Length: 155
Length: 216
Image (cartoon, each protein chain N blue to C red):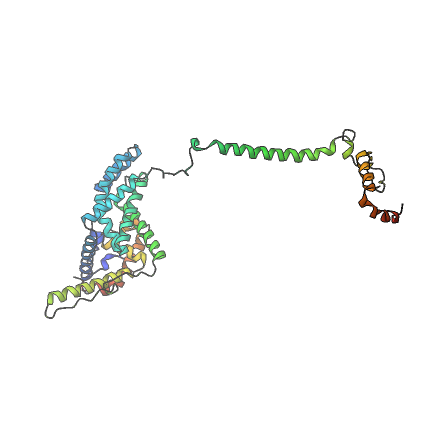
């Protein structure tokens, strides 16, 4: 568009529009508002170039760590190490030569016999005191009633 | 709309030729650029305050008329000035600073417009009636008051019609008739060709002619 096309009436209307628009903007932003805006801009610029502050995750200082915790940690490590050594040792048992093993734990290749009951060889000690008491009991009066029973007993 | 066509006001305006007489803003911007390049950022920031004071009123008028919202205009102007300082090293001192600044301001306003479109599509440009304010009663026989109300109503129609313009037409119209920029300067500030600027001006004025008639 060539603004030569704008006639005088339009020009007057446009000038009136401009004056009204500027007055409206000036009313919305008075000197105090512009001053505030200027401060905001300069405050933003003042923060440029300063990297954002990173807040570290809070942690306890080294001096606060008690020795009990360290001891418990060592106990745990020792238990774990013992378990590992035990498992590995169990695996290496099979590599040990047969002669070196105790016979009690050697597996027997011989045919197994049926198990025989084992009787204890109990030696009967001669107890004179006991025999005396039996003889004494036989001779006492109360034992006469037992003679019939004794005779019925198979020998 | 009768009357003989008159000469193009934009063409009549004095072209801003930086080579002959650089504007105070251009001089100040060149000084700030030199300070930044010399590593004197604190001093450059202090001088930048003077540049802000020099251009602030003009910037807020453009932004406010384009965005029709005080908060958005405030944010857009702040963003524009911060961007200017951040990229002052890219400013070519042989070119008018005003045009460069206008371009940055326009971009900031467009960004704000996009953000508003995304977030608040449901908010329309408000008028007194839309805000639910009570309609002023005209006292009987008070001609001056009635005239004021009519003028207010007329202004509401004009601003509504300007707000209804497509974005590029509204931008060109605002830069030409609020900021009094020539088509060449608008072309430099917006990246459009001068022919495109003139077409947008023509179309905007054709749409507004009906409501602009009778503006006092």
